[in-house]
Image 1: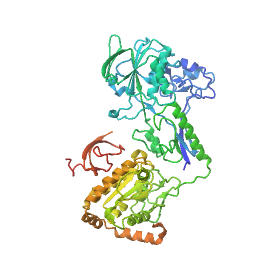
Image 2: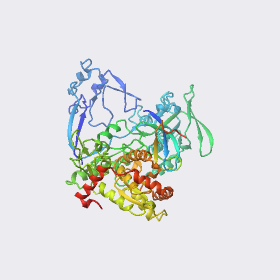
Image 3: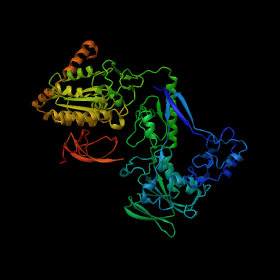
Image 4: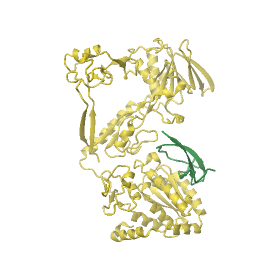
Length: 588
Length: 50
């Protein structure tokens, strides 16, 4: 746990921040002019520049990609005028290595680029801008020093439209998530406009206004009171009058059911957030998992909202999900507290449910390494694999996948689970629906069904495992051997898996089992797979009712056929008997 | 990113359907008819769609 070795590339600045006194003489003589990224390309900067006004350290930096004075020195004017001799073209990137106990991942998010949404004409019409560009235009430190003008004629726009959910809440584009910040950002922008320019008429085109935070509803109401018109409906297309450069927005107002036509001076696209491009790289470096939206997935949405599934790693900010400044600051505080608690613990207690590899039985195939979601197994070809127990979270997917049976999952050994299976199905198995339920979700879902007094047939018998990925093929086949008419493997929903993505192994295994059953002449439908969350007691009850109906269709002949079709392999049966004899305490 | 049309069968209700699957996608599968998660991916050549 923890003990990360971090290799950091410290990029060369080419300006010594200890010597630079920010006199600005260097920028005055620099002949290179390039778009200023901070100002969203709305103004320019020199090759030697301060990235943004509040940059720390407050010192110039040389953009070597654009500088003319590198190798061999062709320009060097900045170095000539620098009285402090702070500029050095010989500066090089430094590689720094640090040993750290915890890592806080705060890589942020990216803003959606609307160039692909050509319906709104972002690439065709100069007066269609993004909310980020709006931010720079209205900012006192922006390219126009806060004088809000439209790009086509530098005149102040008096009719402004805001289009919400650009690049958000759009399943057709594969971007179904809500970006969380855009609604209130637009409300804030309309209030800014109303404050700076009371004669401006603002129209907001929206799907829903999500004003859920503290004082947000009040702010929304103030915006409406300031005369901002909110039209429920998103424009299909935006056209430009080539003569006046005014924009014509046609929209169906879904509140009134009427088609409206708005002529506007400027349109602001309220762009959403998306996962950063390098998220995948960080994800593989720290063995982190992602949600279906592509943002990082926390260890648990309610109980461990800032923890990554990898121990010692925490999240802060929008890399985990789109969120505003307040929430990001809250999460950063929580992440640093969690990291501090771990660093100051001195001694860490971990669950005893971890796996152990028998070095003699291990064939060094490396399968366990591939299926371990936590990267907790160390292995080099030709040598037995070793579990790093401090990293092992105890899902058991390695033990379920280990063909030679070299991995023992403490407290959930093969012998224990097989013994439970046999005991459950020892009497009248034909009357039972056999269920493997994961500890965190499905077992809790069954509990929920029970405590909610939901009615379902009493035919089910549940065996608990920590994760559905612990259920090996052998365990399912053993249930059929013991005469189970129907077997259910159930676990957490994809986004809720407590072991990063271990339940994907369950899917693979069940797919393979369906093929095996079919090959053996056993109805594959007799094996079912369901994701049941801790809150889905109703679903658990429904599934139990359906499986009981299925159980009634399974004939004694079918049960007998399955018993015979999956005879245990002699070698495995002998190994199991030997293991039980050697350690009788493990069999319950 | 490449996408292929895959065939699936619900092992709970028997419903067969096709869906576009993007390379490397990690998506929980649910039967569009009965909402079951017992979704079997079918082989293209051996099991023709109904």
